[in-house]
Length: 124
Image 1 (cartoon, rainbow, N blue to C red):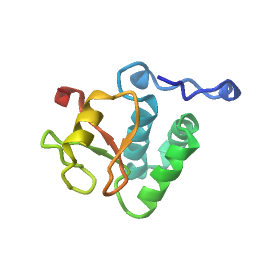
Image 2 (cartoon, rainbow, N blue to C red; image 1 turned 90 degrees about the vertical axis):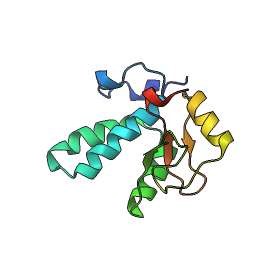
Image 3 (tube, helix red, strand yellow; image 1 turned 120 degrees about the vertical axis):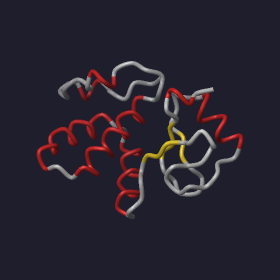
Image 4 (cartoon, rainbow, N blue to C red; image 1 turned 45 degrees about the vertical axis):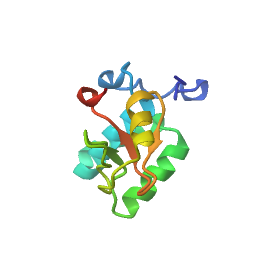
């Protein structure tokens, strides 16, 4: 898994302990947490939001911000029935298989564009 923190970002604070390790892609974990904070709309959390954004690659942030700006969910869960939690369209068997097994990469829904993830208890 590629690290999202490069040598030019040594001045940033460390990632939250709750996001260290794990099998999901680190950027995806950060995007999930960022979406939760933004949708909460709490001004006190602005510093936390800025901290999370500093760890996420710009190409992911551009997509994330665009989805939220259009009023859509940017990060969505794949249900056990292989349905995207963002648009409620059923994913292809291939897409579902890949999202469930290749957890160290970022996957998106071909219908709505949101980032996809699977809860650990739903892994096959």
